[in-house]
Image 1 (cartoon, rainbow, N blue to C red):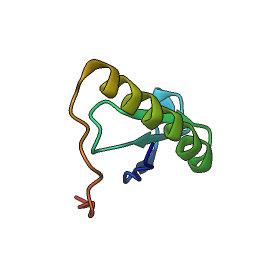
Image 2: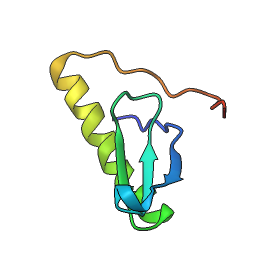
Image 3: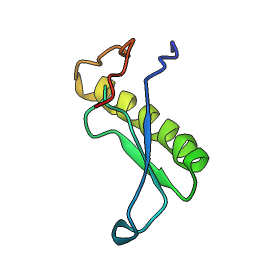
Length: 73
């Protein structure tokens, strides 16, 4: 399987949300993970990306290519 690299946004979670960090993959709707540190969130989201892609293939869903640029608002 070809490896696709997707941009990931890592941001801190509020104390009300449990603290730590969230890692979101904007190109893959609903694909996200979290961790106690930014590094842990980034490592954990790699599994989420793999599972998202496997599920998309199994269900015949279109897999978007990784975006080249990520715009920050």
